[in-house]
Length: 169
Image (cartoon, rainbow, N blue to C red):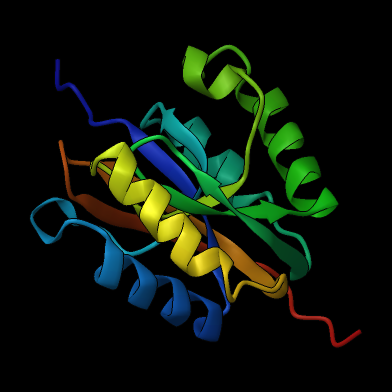
């Protein structure tokens, strides 16, 4: 029997926001450990099944706004905290759909964030947070869809993009 790699589900951001977070990640993430673009993970491990693909494909919704509210210390890195009621609702609905299949890490409370530095020392993280906090002001970003990725033991392979509907509100 073929063993499939687990799938990771992320929120796709508007192009300008994605570019900003990618640039921050390139600038601050240790290059030898930076295999990925910046991302907002909803689930770290979903089964690679037809049911998973169907649930993700059928989870269509409208674009929604999110707020980047602060910088957070990850201990050995730094992330931007993402707040959004729509994001929380989306994750809760998907969690219900996957409840019997998700790993303990994904069953616990959700803390939306985008990591720009990780796998460094606590001192490096504290220094970066101090540097970035001096000029930080909350700002908005937009969720435009979902991306499903296959985990390859480090790098990820893109499997599917599910766009949200654009409504000019």
